[in-house]
Amino acid sequence: MRPARLLLVAAQITVGSALVAGGLIVWTIPYHYSRALGIAFELIRSDARYVVIGDSITAIASPATVCGKPAINAGIPNYTTEDYGSALAIFRPLLGERRVFVALGTNDTWPGAPSYAGFGREYGKLLQRLGGRVEAVVLVPPARYGVRYPDRTRRDRVNAIITALANAARIPIVLVTTMSTTDGVHPNARGTVQWQAALRSACSASSRSVET
Image 1 (tube, rainbow, N blue to C red):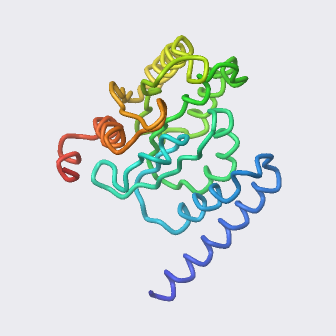
Image 2 (tube, one colour):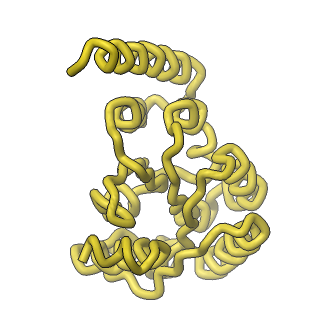
């Protein structure tokens, strides 16, 4: 590695480490420190063109490449949209010029989830914080519905809110029409392929052909 490049990388790591440390000091969800740190350092060291942010579905299913380019899996299990808004305090300064796919909302649809009431506000704030980086948003995929599972009425309302906000910002929308699961919510091997195919539908025909 050339000296100039080495110095640049060292500077990025130093700045990134400071940002991460500062973010963790004010962050109040200690269970997810290790996952957040892993994503932050991946943002520092990787040349990936895309970032896919989301919850456990993203953590399971996000592919290594999107639109023919390397992508960072930035899914954090159990996260609501409001939670991820807090995570952006760490991630946003490290995004650079990367494009972002947003796949959030499932954890806001569970019965009794307190984040549901403010979902529209928090999702709108998240899109604003990402500025013009959003490549596409992914609607909440179908699941098993019931007392122990996401609420279908909530899911429909959440998807309607995402659609309205994305349309207002002229952001492409990804619809996952079918997703096979292991437990009614999380994708199995087949569901992962289905989710990834939906995600890639937002890419141009030429970039999709690179990945097939």
